[in-house]
Image (cartoon, rainbow, N blue to C red; front, side, top):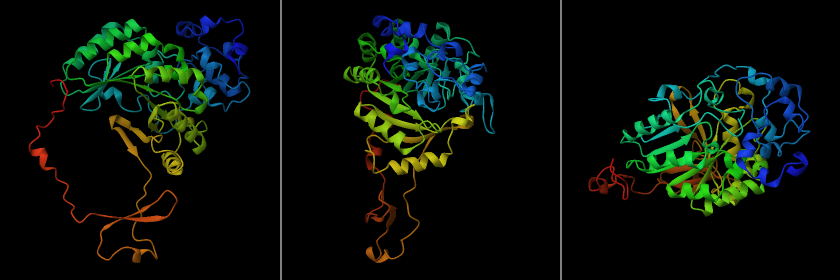
Length: 399
């Protein structure tokens, strides 16, 4: 449905203004019921409190008014189920609080860290892993907190990469972003920056030529965005991604596997191939984090493994992401893949392999076992490691 029909009387110039979109985000049952037929569960969710509700008019215009199962509705409008805490749910599901040396920094890995720069978002995803922050519990991140974080990062010579996150940095002005990116890029030991934002999905008008030029100045910088369903791959979102890629800013996607929303091979296949057609690489498919009130959106881990196995051979390898789990209690991110190793020589096929050849039986995508032989030589030492100085990468700044 065209946005003009959903928001009559709104001028084209206002609609295309990302600041107007933020100012007019829909937050209450009264505002949302003008667009959709709210269910009792949605009304209970909107009355709960807790994580904020805000839906940009652009994203709200994508909601199916009559279908509660609409993937856009499911991500944007809370259900009463958010008030239920399941076994294993946690306020801090990935143990970030154990790794916050200063308020604006999370560091769980030796070579990279998160810089948290805001507690607000254009749309508050109902599966948000950081709802203790985006719910307003901590309060805003002011300039002093962010500057303290940047100063701390500058003193950590082992860090090579910083992910700018929040909240969503896409709500910040160009000047505010520049005030963060410039000092980060001046830190010699930082090689790569990432900007984690859902703006291309829920606020695509935020991506304009000025923003692209700003981000390109601080290359290598990657935009990490968050499409979860092919319904979000609109012409506006497509244009936003194209502007970034054409402007020299690579875009990668991290989707979350959400029960009943994208938890089918069809939904994921359409999402991954649609992203690839838009030159957006699918980096991760995340297993839902164990955050309070989100159990109704999570799938069993086995479901994600089975779905990726089903897609293998049907979807280009360029389009397929890794299935990732951010482990509880600060255990870090790990990836899980379908197991294609067969336990031994399948019955009746043993004679197809030359006697004495070592190797492994693997299951092909079509379901037939195939033998992969090992080479005669199995030594994997790299002799040049003894010559090349450890930790030296061409073009890397001094650590």
